[in-house]
Amino acid sequence: MGRALVALAGLFLVVASPAFAQASAWADVEGDVAQARLVSGVAGLGGGGVLSLGLQIRLEPGWHTYWRQPGEGGIPPVLDWAGSTNLAGIEIAFPLPKRKSEGGLTSFIYENEVVLPLAVRVADPARPLGLRLQLLYGVCKDICIPAEASLALDLPPGTAGPTAFADLIAKYDARVPRASLPGFQFDGLKRENGRLVVTLRSAKPLVTPDLVVEGDGWTTDAPKIESLDQHRARLVLPLGGLPARITAWDGLTGLELALTAWAD
Image (cartoon, rainbow, N blue to C red; front, side):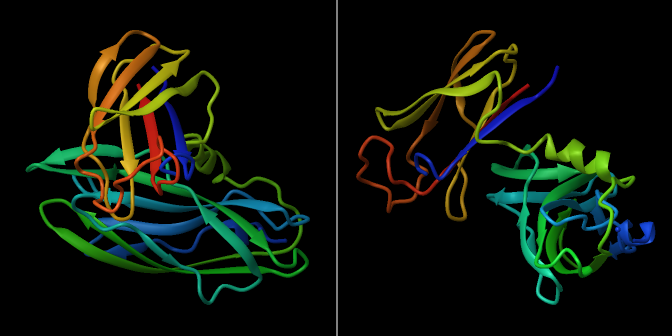
């Protein structure tokens, strides 16, 4: 069964030569337990606009890395694009992670492989793009290792036809929570008796709905499923875990949080 996912962020609580389109060589980490590289979905810059690229990370079996919000244990990825040339802007997206609970701690992780889609804008499409990335991220199994990689990718002016990486990037982009998704929506959101109560509605049958509320460096635990039928779920989260600075609410307005929900 397909997975539906949707996010509300900041609303309530808030290449001339095909060789240039290929990614840099894999950057290995600690005995090849993880590898990272930049990949491009287009062969060149075309006339400008938004280019589809990706940061691909592969992990050996049993190892994992972390979502933008790692949870109670873990290291979020840090991307530094200093040193890039002809770069006007870049936005990174995070596909939906897996919730991992172990030893009383909850983390949000990626296993095996993940591609973080990159929406890239160039300053001048008549000049080559040179991406340079200093990547810091965590990889964990029985122990956690802070990993570092220096990555590079160059794209020339000219045709922006698709490369062999286009479908891979699109596959992971489809897993990124969006502010709206046909057939899946937040049907209700309120504070009730010291709890956050969220109602989800889905055109597809709901099996195991989940919800994450993110703040500045923290996340909530898994929600309690208070009611569930095929197309509607009522999820409840205690508010005791929210930051102490969030005390007086006018409904749910003005709080700086992000709300992401998904359902198998």
